[in-house]
Image (cartoon, rainbow, N blue to C red; front, side):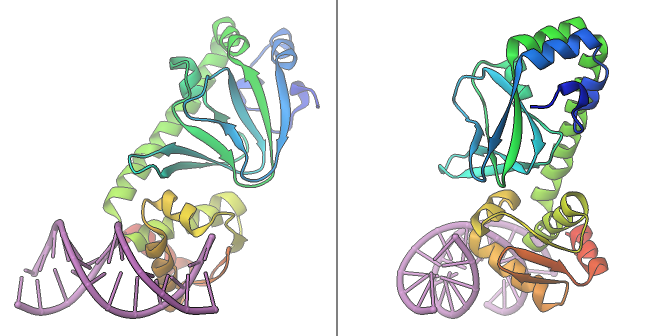
Length: 225
DNA sequence: GCATTAACCACAG
DNA sequence: CTGTGGTTAATGC
């Protein structure tokens, strides 16, 4: 494993650590390589470590009343995993799994808390991170509840295009049922929404490969809901 | 009432 | 696993 000091994807929080603090981080974390569909942290299990997504793509999901999971968020590199739990509870309140081959750094709670106590700038960056994160949940909450299925699907297609892949043609490494769990709908409705959007010429989809043909229209559908 | 939307169900590639 | 069609319940003219 390379040194945290020279990690290319290190967080803004780690950047403000002093040299001796990076050493603490360094000595108490471990890098793990995971395949797609492997569990990073598991809801209901003891929260002993915080994860940090260094490479790949992951999802945060939580069990719902019907036994099926809702996907709360797609994680990109540079995301902390399980911080909310580790700082407030002893048991993970949600799960995180990889959706493609990924690298995760784990750090134990004790060392992490030690860094928070030692360095206010570090703590400040983490608060900033959590605040931004919460704001995106606010937006998502409103979107999911007020937009129709076509608008919600447009949202996620745009997310994968603009933020994840930065390309008009890309793969979404999720099954239809996962896509449904992400946009809070059903497998069937996702299928129909994909067909709707294809019919009017906004996208072209084959399997998990999506291509945006009419970006403006897709954007409009996303905005109008 | 009637239309729209989306979930649920069953069945077929 | 995914797509399709029929049915049904809720909601809004």
